[in-house]
Length: 256
Length: 280
Image (cartoon, rainbow over all chains, first blue to last red; front, side, top):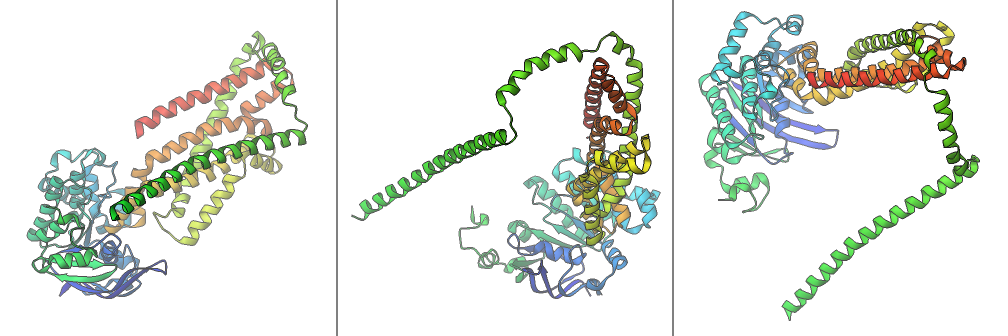
């Protein structure tokens, strides 16, 4: 059974701006999928429709066979706690320590009161530390997040999403604000999580070469429509130009 | 032939461009000149309409200075009143702190309902914003006058008058700060399945705390200033003290009151700047 399935999904913002038009695709468990396309083509909207940060206008979105679009508040919470999310700007609580931010991943699994008061069990704390150690942040565990570099912050947000014990991780341009070195560390970590923990990953990427190297499958999006869906091997140059609606020589990938 | 034509074309384009640039500068100068003239005309018209004589006004300044140096410098008698003035000053500033803290405690939960970050309900958010605007835009002096009818001249009237405006101001300021600072991390916490109360305690409070405290400190400063004015009306605190001396024509003591208010306000400002630096 596929873990995520879109059936004829449309999204219209403010009754006029069409973000997604008749989008249909499905992602199997354990896949590593990248979505590429120009800015404003609806990549973020696709990701946010899955965990209902954005409500689709119509169509069906299935997560593990469960139709997300009709979920009430409580059901949305059940869905969200199984889906990790990583953002371009890390979206950490910058003034809190690394370990506190990682433990935030458990909030979805707790009752409102015990989560509010921050009662984490010993097991959860130990798990948080072991994840931090795996991601190479153990020396920063008690540091405030605003003291960290961009790459370190993104690793904290990966740790936070692993803490949720998710079956799916959504990454909204995870390396867009990182230098090439940190970008590689983050992509390797995501790849590693995907392989060793069997967590499905769906990424939005601007870097076509990165998408080609890491993903098993690429979805190309142009103004809200899927124009390519297949393995990176068959994504030819012409198809890339098609996705970005440009001519030869106009893309940064053409340099060199 | 062709090359020549292109050259001429190029020249023409360049000419056009430089002309455009020059005309922008001319335009700017013209706008400046017109604005200047309008201001002059407005000034002249207003002076004529109100019978205001600028030369007479300026000429009276030296006389005013002489009067000030004669009457407004605290004399020995007024220095004797210093302990009394100080105790009233402390009373007024403690009241301001109490008002601001109470108003902040009420404004914080109220402002959460008005933020985009928590997104409780569009209509509730609108009602919150309108209520806050209402409390904020009625000046505290007007609140004091209104409340005088029902509560009479006592300290509770002053407390409530300051409370209402502070509550309105802080609600508005908290909404803006929370939306500005916390929306990113709240989005992430929501995506992880946290409930709204959990996002308030783990996202909004830790991330926006410095901004909120900064606003509270600012309101304390403002309320100490305002409490002087309110005290005139409610016959309490340092305001009443000033009123008393002024009406007795004991100008030295009155000016001592003013001097100590200024010192207090500056002192509070310095302290709160220090606190801000520490908590940021």
